[in-house]
Length: 313
Image (tube, rainbow, N blue to C red; front, side):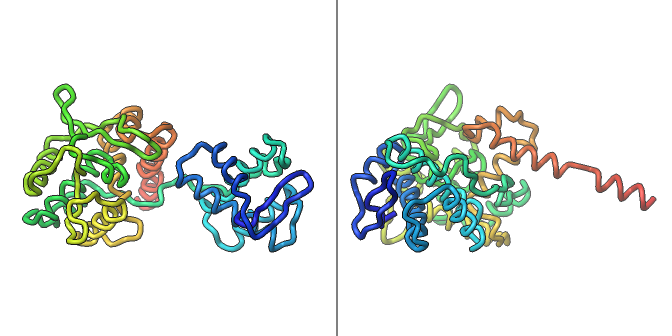
């Protein structure tokens, strides 16, 4: 899209300079977070490069479909293809609304996404093994133990761990809660109950860490370069992965997200109602929680055992 200069009913004109006004107007229409706008812009740049390389000056619906099919053929993941087509649908919906160009991407499907989980979860026994292998004698060990224990028992995302401040740990009724700023949220309007063992782990870490202001990060970096500063999602993911590997769980399907996956799955295995688990996981749509439920139901299916018993007795 960096080649785009003008677009109207007479076609698309490519030029070396970007029409910044066009981008500004489209970004305002999206009314999205900067990172989201950046992603859509990147995807649209790829689309318009495709137009330019194929000499397409006045693209039609079939050109968008051909672009999608080329992405699939070149081995792009379904989620990537879906992202490109979503950006195209939004952009051309906007151009039609503005009277700039017809909506040639309307109702074009992206790629069929597999809704099953791409990451594995841990059993309760495996969780104990991971926590057992953390050296809690050091400050970093106390911090890592507190982070992992809280992520697993509270179902936290890495971004929620990164954004947490000391003052977010509060009392509500007879419970200790942690207010979180989740994915796509602008404020810390949601909270999750913190169990007594999780709170003890956090307090033990904070005590070892020493004096800190309430506005400082709940979990801080222990490295020499940025000691005391807010941890990034990347560093939280890295310590999670190292902790898993230390306990012998070295699989590409086991990551930091597996800890949240574990929290939701163990909640369902404990017999908690689907609505209760949805609230716990802070899923906007219960359909997301139902994916976990469906997978567990499939795992409990006893047809194979019944058939085996019938033909081996």
